[in-house]
Amino acid sequence: MSKYLKEISLFTVLALVLGLTFTFAAEELIPPTRTLEGRVELPGSLTVVSEPPDLEVSLDGSSIGRTPVWFKEVKPGPHTVRIGQEKTEVHVQPGKKMALSFFKDSFIDITKEEAVVEAPVPEVEKPREKEGAVRPPRPEEREDIIRFEQFINRNFDFF
Image (cartoon, rainbow, N blue to C red; front, top):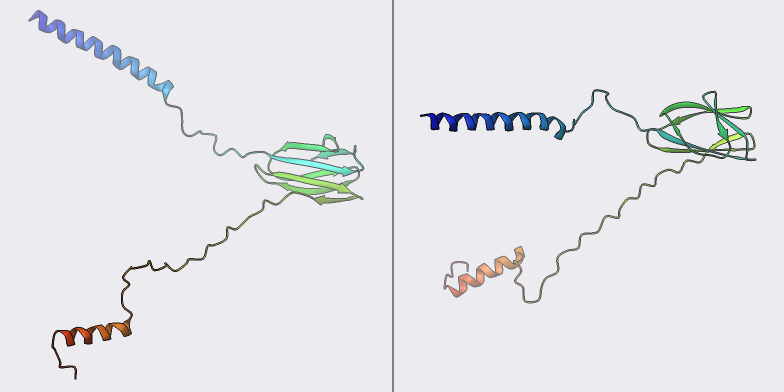
């Protein structure tokens, strides 16, 4: 009886040790699939060039440098860009690049539009008949075949 109790207690201890080990180890193995913060928007980028170069550029009232300004990371949404005494409103899309040029006291949006290329739709060719292949008879040929079969079988009630 004591041998039987030793086996049961050994299995119980082993089960508890393994159970606790896997319970605490599992917390670190499974990464969270969602966050409580919600959706995070990707920042956009703004490039500003000018002719003449080396003009002061400010974004929403704070200086971001002198032209040319390359790929300045910007929060998505509407912003005010000022170069010298001139200003304009821009709307930066999340994760998109925007380019602005200042030439002869006017702003020009030089953002490249992503080209949407439509793939040509291939024309469907009629399947070609293989040499020696048997094709089904056309409706007008079907009547001739029926009459021929009746003639061969000596069924002359079609006259």
